[in-house]
Length: 116
Image 1 (cartoon, rainbow, N blue to C red):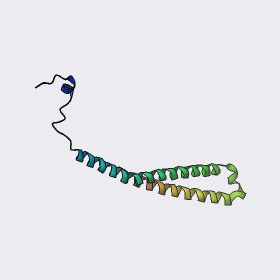
Image 2 (image 1 turned 90 degrees about the vertical axis):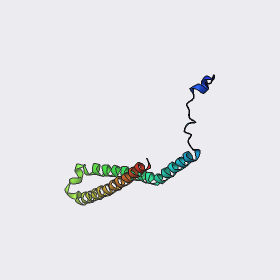
Image 3 (image 1 turned 135 degrees about the horizontal axis):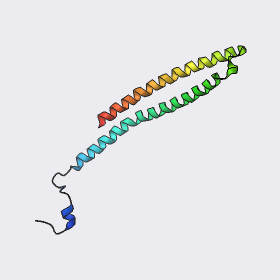
Image 4 (image 1 turned 120 degrees about the horizontal axis):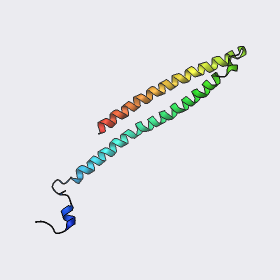
């Protein structure tokens, strides 16, 4: 029998395949649990990004000092050696941080792919 109410006629037949509210709740809960598991990794990535940014700023400041021509005068040899040593250490630390960031980013992407 056809309904004379246009709102009922326009409504989709959602009664044919009702979604169990328990299934929906379980899926939402599982999704929330997965997001919660990803949060520490995301936080760690943000911290690494911050440390990398600070390291790059320090390296840039150090390289600006190294660009000063007066630094290469004969009586500034020990200062030059110290700055070059610091530059090498900073570059090494940045490389380690970037490698750690790449590893964690890969792990995050793997977990996110497994989630979907």
